[in-house]
Image (cartoon, rainbow, N blue to C red):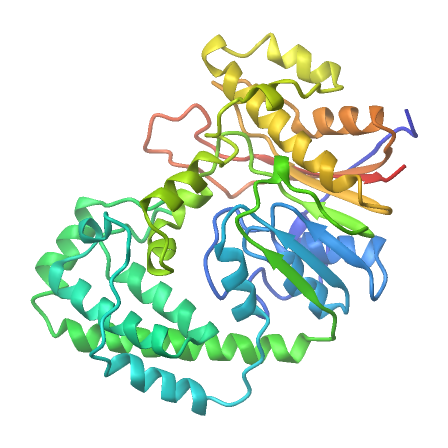
Length: 402
Protein backbone atom coordinates (compact mmCIF):
# COMPACT_ATOMS: atom_id res chain seq x y z
CA UNK A 1 0.00 0.00 0.00
CA UNK A 2 2.99 2.37 0.07
CA UNK A 3 3.85 4.99 2.68
CA UNK A 4 1.35 7.06 4.60
CA UNK A 5 0.33 10.05 2.51
CA UNK A 6 1.68 13.42 3.58
CA UNK A 7 -1.18 15.95 3.47
CA UNK A 8 -0.18 19.61 3.32
CA UNK A 9 -2.38 22.70 3.40
CA UNK A 10 -0.95 25.22 0.94
CA UNK A 11 -1.94 28.09 -1.30
CA UNK A 12 -1.45 26.80 -4.83
CA UNK A 13 -0.84 30.33 -6.12
CA UNK A 14 2.11 30.60 -3.71
CA UNK A 15 3.75 27.32 -4.73
CA UNK A 16 5.93 29.13 -7.27
CA UNK A 17 6.48 32.65 -5.92
CA UNK A 18 8.65 33.57 -8.91
CA UNK A 19 5.53 33.54 -11.11
CA UNK A 20 4.02 37.06 -11.10
CA UNK A 21 0.45 36.07 -12.05
CA UNK A 22 -1.67 33.27 -13.50
CA UNK A 23 -1.65 35.05 -16.88
CA UNK A 24 2.07 35.77 -17.19
CA UNK A 25 4.00 34.93 -20.38
CA UNK A 26 1.37 33.66 -22.87
CA UNK A 27 -0.95 31.95 -20.38
CA UNK A 28 -3.56 34.69 -20.65
CA UNK A 29 -3.78 34.80 -24.43
CA UNK A 30 -7.20 33.18 -24.60
CA UNK A 31 -9.79 32.26 -21.98
CA UNK A 32 -10.31 28.61 -21.10
CA UNK A 33 -12.72 27.49 -18.35
CA UNK A 34 -11.08 25.98 -15.24
CA UNK A 35 -7.63 26.64 -16.68
CA UNK A 36 -4.73 24.85 -14.95
CA UNK A 37 -2.91 27.62 -13.06
CA UNK A 38 0.79 27.75 -14.00
CA UNK A 39 1.98 27.84 -10.36
CA UNK A 40 0.88 24.23 -9.83
CA UNK A 41 2.49 22.99 -13.04
CA UNK A 42 5.67 24.99 -12.37
CA UNK A 43 5.98 23.54 -8.86
CA UNK A 44 5.57 19.99 -10.16
CA UNK A 45 8.13 20.51 -12.91
CA UNK A 46 10.62 22.05 -10.46
CA UNK A 47 10.10 19.33 -7.83
CA UNK A 48 9.85 16.12 -9.84
CA UNK A 49 11.33 16.66 -13.32
CA UNK A 50 14.64 17.50 -14.97
CA UNK A 51 15.53 19.43 -18.11
CA UNK A 52 14.77 17.37 -21.20
CA UNK A 53 12.09 15.21 -19.52
CA UNK A 54 8.83 14.48 -21.33
CA UNK A 55 5.64 15.27 -19.42
CA UNK A 56 2.09 14.44 -20.54
CA UNK A 57 -1.24 16.09 -19.77
CA UNK A 58 -4.16 14.01 -21.14
CA UNK A 59 -6.71 16.71 -20.18
CA UNK A 60 -4.62 19.57 -21.54
CA UNK A 61 -7.36 22.23 -21.73
CA UNK A 62 -5.70 25.56 -22.48
CA UNK A 63 -2.20 24.07 -22.76
CA UNK A 64 -0.66 25.33 -19.51
CA UNK A 65 1.72 22.36 -19.40
CA UNK A 66 3.27 23.10 -22.80
CA UNK A 67 3.91 26.75 -22.01
CA UNK A 68 5.48 25.91 -18.63
CA UNK A 69 7.60 23.13 -20.15
CA UNK A 70 9.05 25.49 -22.76
CA UNK A 71 9.76 28.01 -20.01
CA UNK A 72 11.69 25.33 -18.10
CA UNK A 73 13.31 23.46 -21.02
CA UNK A 74 11.12 20.37 -20.68
CA UNK A 75 9.04 18.63 -23.35
CA UNK A 76 5.27 18.29 -23.28
CA UNK A 77 2.61 16.04 -24.76
CA UNK A 78 -0.78 17.77 -24.58
CA UNK A 79 -3.87 15.70 -25.36
CA UNK A 80 -7.45 16.94 -25.28
CA UNK A 81 -10.89 16.16 -26.65
CA UNK A 82 -11.19 19.76 -27.84
CA UNK A 83 -9.42 20.21 -31.21
CA UNK A 84 -8.82 23.85 -30.26
CA UNK A 85 -5.80 22.78 -28.15
CA UNK A 86 -3.70 22.57 -31.32
CA UNK A 87 -4.52 26.13 -32.41
CA UNK A 88 -4.12 27.54 -28.92
CA UNK A 89 -0.64 26.12 -28.48
CA UNK A 90 0.62 27.24 -31.88
CA UNK A 91 -0.31 30.77 -30.83
CA UNK A 92 0.85 30.53 -27.21
CA UNK A 93 4.28 29.20 -28.12
CA UNK A 94 5.02 31.25 -31.24
CA UNK A 95 7.60 33.99 -30.92
CA UNK A 96 6.82 37.09 -32.98
CA UNK A 97 9.46 39.77 -32.46
CA UNK A 98 8.28 42.18 -35.15
CA UNK A 99 4.77 43.54 -35.61
CA UNK A 100 5.18 44.23 -39.33
CA UNK A 101 3.77 40.87 -40.51
CA UNK A 102 0.90 41.16 -38.04
CA UNK A 103 0.24 44.67 -39.34
CA UNK A 104 -0.06 43.26 -42.86
CA UNK A 105 -2.46 40.61 -41.59
CA UNK A 106 -4.44 43.28 -39.73
CA UNK A 107 -4.81 45.36 -42.87
CA UNK A 108 -5.98 42.36 -44.92
CA UNK A 109 -8.57 41.45 -42.29
CA UNK A 110 -10.08 44.90 -41.81
CA UNK A 111 -10.25 45.53 -45.58
CA UNK A 112 -11.31 42.07 -46.73
CA UNK A 113 -14.17 41.56 -49.16
CA UNK A 114 -13.89 37.76 -49.52
CA UNK A 115 -16.38 36.09 -47.11
CA UNK A 116 -16.04 32.79 -45.28
CA UNK A 117 -19.28 31.10 -44.25
CA UNK A 118 -19.17 28.63 -41.30
CA UNK A 119 -20.76 25.21 -41.85
CA UNK A 120 -22.51 25.24 -38.48
CA UNK A 121 -26.27 25.70 -39.02
CA UNK A 122 -26.70 27.72 -35.82
CA UNK A 123 -24.32 30.53 -36.76
CA UNK A 124 -27.13 32.95 -37.69
CA UNK A 125 -28.70 32.60 -34.25
CA UNK A 126 -25.62 34.10 -32.58
CA UNK A 127 -25.19 37.26 -34.68
CA UNK A 128 -27.06 40.27 -35.92
CA UNK A 129 -27.16 39.86 -39.74
CA UNK A 130 -25.08 42.99 -40.42
CA UNK A 131 -22.41 42.01 -37.91
CA UNK A 132 -22.28 38.48 -39.32
CA UNK A 133 -21.50 39.92 -42.76
CA UNK A 134 -18.53 41.82 -41.31
CA UNK A 135 -17.28 38.78 -39.40
CA UNK A 136 -17.54 36.55 -42.49
CA UNK A 137 -15.36 38.96 -44.48
CA UNK A 138 -12.78 39.18 -41.69
CA UNK A 139 -12.60 35.39 -41.49
CA UNK A 140 -12.31 35.21 -45.27
CA UNK A 141 -9.03 37.12 -44.99
CA UNK A 142 -7.79 34.70 -42.31
CA UNK A 143 -8.34 31.67 -44.54
CA UNK A 144 -6.52 33.37 -47.41
CA UNK A 145 -3.41 33.76 -45.21
CA UNK A 146 -3.67 32.22 -41.71
CA UNK A 147 -1.91 33.69 -38.68
CA UNK A 148 -1.74 31.99 -35.24
CA UNK A 149 -2.09 35.24 -33.26
CA UNK A 150 -4.56 36.57 -35.81
CA UNK A 151 -6.72 33.50 -35.21
CA UNK A 152 -7.02 34.26 -31.50
CA UNK A 153 -7.74 37.93 -32.23
CA UNK A 154 -10.56 36.84 -34.54
CA UNK A 155 -11.87 34.44 -31.89
CA UNK A 156 -11.98 37.29 -29.39
CA UNK A 157 -13.68 39.63 -31.85
CA UNK A 158 -16.18 37.01 -33.01
CA UNK A 159 -17.25 36.40 -29.42
CA UNK A 160 -17.37 40.03 -28.37
CA UNK A 161 -19.77 41.01 -31.16
CA UNK A 162 -21.97 37.89 -30.93
CA UNK A 163 -25.05 37.45 -28.79
CA UNK A 164 -23.01 35.22 -26.43
CA UNK A 165 -22.92 36.68 -22.93
CA UNK A 166 -19.45 37.98 -22.04
CA UNK A 167 -19.89 37.09 -18.35
CA UNK A 168 -20.72 33.38 -18.76
CA UNK A 169 -18.00 30.91 -19.87
CA UNK A 170 -20.45 28.54 -21.56
CA UNK A 171 -21.96 29.94 -24.76
CA UNK A 172 -25.15 31.61 -23.55
CA UNK A 173 -27.35 34.05 -25.43
CA UNK A 174 -28.60 36.55 -22.88
CA UNK A 175 -31.24 39.25 -23.34
CA UNK A 176 -28.74 41.77 -21.95
CA UNK A 177 -26.18 41.03 -24.67
CA UNK A 178 -28.77 40.90 -27.44
CA UNK A 179 -30.09 44.29 -26.35
CA UNK A 180 -26.56 45.73 -26.29
CA UNK A 181 -25.84 44.48 -29.82
CA UNK A 182 -29.18 45.38 -31.39
CA UNK A 183 -29.92 48.68 -29.64
CA UNK A 184 -26.45 50.15 -29.06
CA UNK A 185 -23.75 48.65 -31.28
CA UNK A 186 -25.58 48.10 -34.59
CA UNK A 187 -27.03 51.62 -34.57
CA UNK A 188 -23.53 53.09 -34.10
CA UNK A 189 -20.45 52.96 -36.34
CA UNK A 190 -20.19 49.24 -35.61
CA UNK A 191 -17.84 48.38 -38.49
CA UNK A 192 -15.10 50.62 -37.16
CA UNK A 193 -15.89 49.48 -33.63
CA UNK A 194 -15.33 45.84 -34.64
CA UNK A 195 -12.14 46.64 -36.52
CA UNK A 196 -10.72 48.66 -33.62
CA UNK A 197 -11.49 45.86 -31.17
CA UNK A 198 -9.71 43.43 -33.49
CA UNK A 199 -6.66 45.72 -33.75
CA UNK A 200 -6.38 46.08 -29.98
CA UNK A 201 -6.77 42.32 -29.49
CA UNK A 202 -4.01 41.61 -32.00
CA UNK A 203 -1.68 44.13 -30.35
CA UNK A 204 -2.31 42.59 -26.91
CA UNK A 205 -1.57 39.10 -28.26
CA UNK A 206 1.65 40.41 -29.82
CA UNK A 207 2.71 41.81 -26.43
CA UNK A 208 1.95 38.43 -24.81
CA UNK A 209 4.12 36.74 -27.42
CA UNK A 210 6.97 39.11 -26.60
CA UNK A 211 6.59 38.28 -22.91
CA UNK A 212 6.63 34.53 -23.61
CA UNK A 213 9.86 35.02 -25.60
CA UNK A 214 11.52 36.55 -22.51
CA UNK A 215 10.80 33.39 -20.49
CA UNK A 216 11.39 30.77 -23.20
CA UNK A 217 14.25 28.35 -22.44
CA UNK A 218 13.80 25.53 -24.94
CA UNK A 219 12.10 22.17 -25.33
CA UNK A 220 9.40 20.78 -27.60
CA UNK A 221 5.72 20.03 -27.42
CA UNK A 222 3.23 17.76 -29.16
CA UNK A 223 -0.44 18.77 -29.17
CA UNK A 224 -3.24 16.45 -30.28
CA UNK A 225 -6.90 17.44 -30.26
CA UNK A 226 -9.99 15.31 -30.82
CA UNK A 227 -8.62 12.69 -28.41
CA UNK A 228 -11.26 10.37 -26.91
CA UNK A 229 -9.07 9.46 -23.94
CA UNK A 230 -10.64 6.14 -22.81
CA UNK A 231 -9.78 4.75 -26.26
CA UNK A 232 -6.46 6.49 -26.91
CA UNK A 233 -3.17 4.61 -27.08
CA UNK A 234 -0.04 6.61 -26.29
CA UNK A 235 2.69 5.22 -28.54
CA UNK A 236 5.80 6.10 -26.51
CA UNK A 237 7.14 6.10 -22.95
CA UNK A 238 6.76 9.31 -20.95
CA UNK A 239 8.71 10.42 -17.89
CA UNK A 240 5.88 12.07 -15.92
CA UNK A 241 2.22 13.03 -15.93
CA UNK A 242 0.37 16.03 -14.52
CA UNK A 243 -3.28 16.60 -15.31
CA UNK A 244 -6.58 17.98 -14.09
CA UNK A 245 -9.60 15.90 -15.17
CA UNK A 246 -13.02 17.60 -15.33
CA UNK A 247 -14.52 18.07 -11.88
CA UNK A 248 -17.45 15.65 -11.96
CA UNK A 249 -20.41 17.17 -13.82
CA UNK A 250 -19.19 20.73 -13.34
CA UNK A 251 -17.85 21.81 -16.75
CA UNK A 252 -18.90 21.85 -20.39
CA UNK A 253 -15.70 22.40 -22.31
CA UNK A 254 -16.83 21.70 -25.88
CA UNK A 255 -20.11 23.58 -25.41
CA UNK A 256 -18.09 26.59 -24.27
CA UNK A 257 -16.28 26.67 -27.62
CA UNK A 258 -19.06 26.11 -30.16
CA UNK A 259 -18.49 29.50 -31.80
CA UNK A 260 -14.74 28.97 -32.09
CA UNK A 261 -15.22 25.48 -33.55
CA UNK A 262 -17.79 26.83 -36.01
CA UNK A 263 -15.36 29.49 -37.29
CA UNK A 264 -12.70 26.77 -37.58
CA UNK A 265 -14.99 24.94 -40.00
CA UNK A 266 -16.60 22.29 -37.80
CA UNK A 267 -20.15 21.36 -38.79
CA UNK A 268 -23.17 20.27 -36.73
CA UNK A 269 -22.31 16.58 -36.80
CA UNK A 270 -18.70 17.11 -35.78
CA UNK A 271 -19.59 19.44 -32.90
CA UNK A 272 -22.37 17.12 -31.67
CA UNK A 273 -19.97 14.16 -31.83
CA UNK A 274 -17.41 16.01 -29.68
CA UNK A 275 -20.07 17.02 -27.12
CA UNK A 276 -21.19 13.39 -26.88
CA UNK A 277 -17.67 12.39 -25.83
CA UNK A 278 -17.38 14.90 -22.97
CA UNK A 279 -16.97 13.14 -19.63
CA UNK A 280 -20.17 14.42 -17.97
CA UNK A 281 -22.33 13.66 -21.05
CA UNK A 282 -20.91 10.56 -22.66
CA UNK A 283 -22.86 7.29 -22.69
CA UNK A 284 -22.03 4.62 -20.15
CA UNK A 285 -21.13 2.01 -22.76
CA UNK A 286 -20.61 -1.67 -21.76
CA UNK A 287 -16.82 -1.40 -22.01
CA UNK A 288 -16.75 1.72 -19.81
CA UNK A 289 -19.22 0.16 -17.35
CA UNK A 290 -16.96 -2.92 -17.11
CA UNK A 291 -14.10 -0.83 -15.65
CA UNK A 292 -13.51 -1.82 -12.03
CA UNK A 293 -12.71 0.96 -9.59
CA UNK A 294 -10.34 -0.38 -6.92
CA UNK A 295 -11.51 1.94 -4.17
CA UNK A 296 -13.62 1.33 -1.07
CA UNK A 297 -14.32 5.06 -0.89
CA UNK A 298 -15.80 4.96 -4.38
CA UNK A 299 -18.21 2.19 -3.31
CA UNK A 300 -19.05 3.96 -0.04
CA UNK A 301 -20.08 7.18 -1.79
CA UNK A 302 -21.85 5.29 -4.53
CA UNK A 303 -24.35 4.13 -1.90
CA UNK A 304 -24.97 7.74 -0.82
CA UNK A 305 -25.70 9.26 -4.22
CA UNK A 306 -29.22 9.58 -5.59
CA UNK A 307 -30.10 6.79 -8.03
CA UNK A 308 -30.80 9.36 -10.76
CA UNK A 309 -27.16 10.49 -10.62
CA UNK A 310 -25.48 7.08 -10.38
CA UNK A 311 -25.01 6.85 -14.15
CA UNK A 312 -23.14 10.16 -14.14
CA UNK A 313 -21.08 9.16 -11.07
CA UNK A 314 -20.09 5.79 -12.55
CA UNK A 315 -19.45 7.18 -16.02
CA UNK A 316 -17.23 9.96 -14.66
CA UNK A 317 -14.90 7.80 -12.57
CA UNK A 318 -14.84 4.86 -14.96
CA UNK A 319 -14.17 7.02 -18.03
CA UNK A 320 -11.46 9.09 -16.32
CA UNK A 321 -9.75 6.10 -14.74
CA UNK A 322 -9.89 4.04 -17.95
CA UNK A 323 -8.23 6.91 -19.83
CA UNK A 324 -5.66 7.64 -17.12
CA UNK A 325 -4.71 3.96 -16.81
CA UNK A 326 -3.93 3.77 -20.52
CA UNK A 327 -1.70 6.85 -20.38
CA UNK A 328 -0.11 5.96 -17.02
CA UNK A 329 0.93 2.58 -18.39
CA UNK A 330 3.55 4.57 -20.36
CA UNK A 331 4.68 6.79 -17.43
CA UNK A 332 7.88 5.82 -15.66
CA UNK A 333 8.27 8.60 -13.08
CA UNK A 334 5.74 10.68 -11.15
CA UNK A 335 2.05 11.34 -11.71
CA UNK A 336 0.12 14.31 -10.32
CA UNK A 337 -3.68 14.50 -10.47
CA UNK A 338 -5.36 17.83 -9.70
CA UNK A 339 -9.02 17.59 -8.59
CA UNK A 340 -11.70 19.67 -6.85
CA UNK A 341 -14.66 18.89 -4.60
CA UNK A 342 -17.54 18.98 -7.10
CA UNK A 343 -20.80 17.45 -5.87
CA UNK A 344 -23.43 14.98 -7.07
CA UNK A 345 -26.80 16.18 -5.82
CA UNK A 346 -25.14 17.80 -2.82
CA UNK A 347 -22.99 14.74 -2.03
CA UNK A 348 -19.27 15.51 -2.21
CA UNK A 349 -17.15 12.44 -2.99
CA UNK A 350 -13.45 12.77 -2.05
CA UNK A 351 -12.03 12.54 -5.56
CA UNK A 352 -8.44 12.56 -4.33
CA UNK A 353 -9.03 9.52 -2.10
CA UNK A 354 -10.80 7.57 -4.83
CA UNK A 355 -7.99 8.17 -7.33
CA UNK A 356 -5.36 7.49 -4.66
CA UNK A 357 -6.88 4.20 -3.52
CA UNK A 358 -7.40 2.95 -7.06
CA UNK A 359 -3.91 3.67 -8.33
CA UNK A 360 -2.18 2.51 -5.13
CA UNK A 361 -4.03 -0.78 -5.57
CA UNK A 362 -2.61 -0.84 -9.10
CA UNK A 363 0.95 -0.56 -7.78
CA UNK A 364 1.57 3.20 -7.60
CA UNK A 365 3.17 4.58 -4.44
CA UNK A 366 1.62 7.45 -2.49
CA UNK A 367 3.84 10.51 -2.37
CA UNK A 368 1.84 13.46 -1.02
CA UNK A 369 -1.43 15.39 -1.24
CA UNK A 370 -1.45 19.18 -1.36
CA UNK A 371 -4.70 20.88 -0.34
CA UNK A 372 -5.75 24.43 -1.18
CA UNK A 373 -8.68 25.95 0.74
CA UNK A 374 -10.23 28.36 -1.77
CA UNK A 375 -11.72 31.47 -0.21
CA UNK A 376 -12.63 33.66 -3.15
CA UNK A 377 -14.20 31.54 -5.89
CA UNK A 378 -18.00 31.60 -5.93
CA UNK A 379 -20.33 29.95 -8.43
CA UNK A 380 -23.68 31.29 -9.63
CA UNK A 381 -25.11 32.43 -6.28
CA UNK A 382 -28.20 33.76 -8.03
CA UNK A 383 -29.17 30.37 -9.41
CA UNK A 384 -30.66 27.27 -7.86
CA UNK A 385 -27.42 25.42 -7.31
CA UNK A 386 -26.59 22.63 -4.88
CA UNK A 387 -23.04 23.98 -4.65
CA UNK A 388 -23.49 27.78 -4.53
CA UNK A 389 -20.00 28.35 -3.15
CA UNK A 390 -18.45 26.55 -6.09
CA UNK A 391 -15.21 24.65 -5.57
CA UNK A 392 -14.04 25.28 -1.99
CA UNK A 393 -11.09 22.86 -1.93
CA UNK A 394 -8.69 21.60 -4.55
CA UNK A 395 -6.21 18.74 -4.20
CA UNK A 396 -2.98 17.78 -5.90
CA UNK A 397 -2.36 14.07 -5.52
CA UNK A 398 1.21 12.99 -6.34
CA UNK A 399 2.02 9.33 -6.98
CA UNK A 400 5.15 7.42 -7.98
CA UNK A 401 4.89 4.96 -10.85
CA UNK A 402 5.56 1.27 -10.04
